[in-house]
Image 1 (cartoon, rainbow, N blue to C red):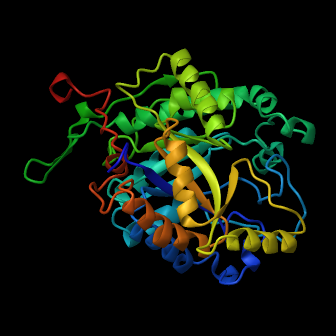
Image 2 (image 1 turned 90 degrees about the horizontal axis):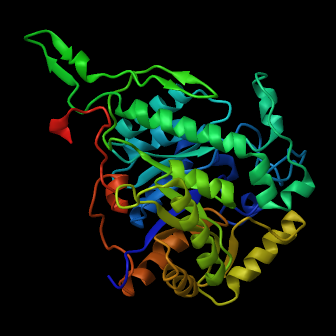
Length: 405
């Protein structure tokens, strides 16, 4: 390969990331809540040798605004549970990573930890996890245990202001991830003996209480689930401002950022570097991968993707907007952009297909071969685990004895 190997992931959500994608030619709106639909998408992504796919999730219905609900009926509403969906797809795939999103503001850390550990077993080491805070105050009403800050339309125009107001939720989320990591470590790798002759199934000395005490909750442990195949499944986070950059530096293995050009990429990565330095993270011991996000609409004919987006915009009644840059063009044009931005210091990209399955197959069958021709992307999987795909080591359990270190 030329330069650093490029990593690619796709973000799967509904009929695609354009709000009117469900009305596009080739869309499958009647199948959105079927296993077959998602299996077709994920197996296509695996045929394209992508590192991983992500599944969106939330505690409320989708909305045209991220911070509040709406009453629209002309856009896709409703989702399947992301962790359960990923677990269902695990035996239908062999190599690709599966990364569901879960809310950490209103969900117990113990439950989250064993769910992701179970997914890692179901996928034989291909699980990841994107913890997400509840940025919408309305989500708290589903649980009735607490309230969370209200984000107004004016707030939404200022990412740094939102991040500052939501800082307590990010601090809590960092504790959730820390608890999950300790629970994943609470069984040493050889804690299971399974010796029928002696009647010893486990070595109880190799199961550990984590005894976590924090301002938000306390968790004793150990986990009910043995140590996952990857030791610790990959933790990814999406970040737009300084507070979530700090959360990524504290808690994540991979941070996904949303630049809009190469200059913006360099500026954001400098902020990520500053957050890493401020938290004291040693990247030699704990690398933090940096991915950029792009919404993509791709067609072979120049101008065709922009015209297709225009038709979708007309159906939706407004031009699509996004936190991430929206790219319309040919696979070759996108390859140029990815390699240019990569040189600013990125490890890879999470691409959000504008319309499914059209833009996913354009990624796997047009973009990937173009990157392969340029020596910038793998021609075969070289690992069996998600950490292996990304070049991340399998961490040792923090509770293991000296002989395992």
